[in-house]
Length: 67
Image (cartoon, rainbow, N blue to C red; front, side):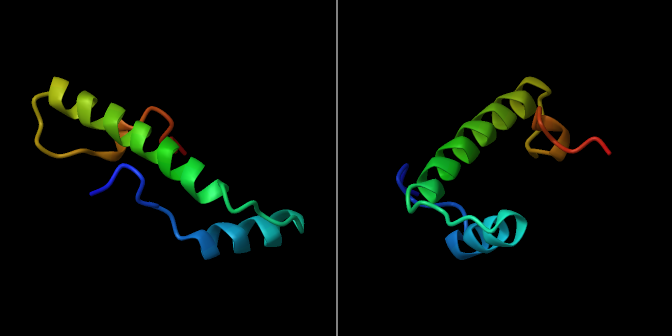
């Protein structure tokens, strides 16, 4: 998988932002979100490895929904 590959569905992001705020979305948003997701996944992988697990779980993401 390429480090430049987009990991989010751009049309869904644009639709969400439009519905939530009425705003348009820059074309650069998908790439930026993909970079954030890659970083979050890398951190979660490290957390799972530290716990000696071979499965990344929701709790490995520091910003996961607690509610």
